[in-house]
Length: 232
Image (cartoon, rainbow, N blue to C red; front, side):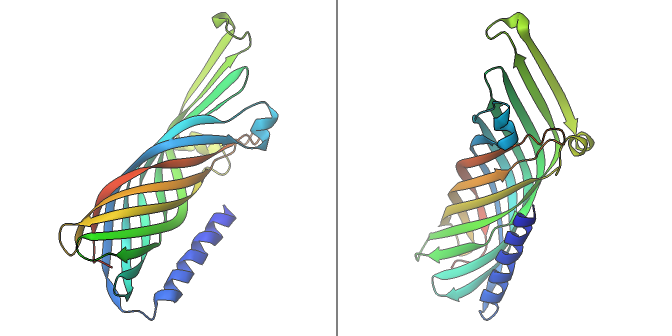
C-alpha cells in the first residue's frame, strides 16, 4: 500500500507542477459505467498450497471530478479525482478446491488524463492513475472436494461478510488498484460529450491474516459515460 500512496502522490505533484503555468480551461466532470473480465493471480502463499489462476469479472459506476488545464490548442491535461461503487468477483482453483470471493467496495483514487482535440466533435483522452477500493461487504466461498468427482466428499463453506468481518479476516482490509484508460469523446456541444472507452488495470488484493493467502488480478474491459467540461 505504501507503493500505491507514493505513486498517487508523485502523479498529483507532477500534474500540479507541470500545469501551474498554464491558463485554466475549466471544471471537468465525468459519470461512467465500466465492466470487464478479471484474471486472478494467486500470490506466493496461495501457489504454495496449490492454487492457480482463475477468471472473474468487475463492474463499477464512478464519477471523475476535477479540472482541465489547457496547454495549447488541441491539447490539455486533466487532474481528476475518482470515486464511486465497484463490484469485484475473484476466483482461484486447485486440484481439490476452489475459492471465490466477491466484494462491494467504495472506490477512491486519482486519474490524470491527457486530452487531445481533433477539432469539431471529436476528442481523445489517455489516462493513468490508481487508488484504493474499500470493501464494505461481500462473500467468501470455499468448495473443498477431497474425493475428486465424488459429491459425498465435498465440503462447501460460504460466508457473508460485513465490513467488520473483512477487517478481522484480511490485512490490509483494502484493495489497491492501478488503471490505464483510453477514451473517445463525441461532443454534442462545446462542453457535453459521450464517452466510449477501454481500460486495463490491476488489483493488489487483500491477504488473509491467517496464512497470508491472497489474490491479485489483471483487468480488461469497456467503459461508457458522459463528460461535462471544455474541449481540449
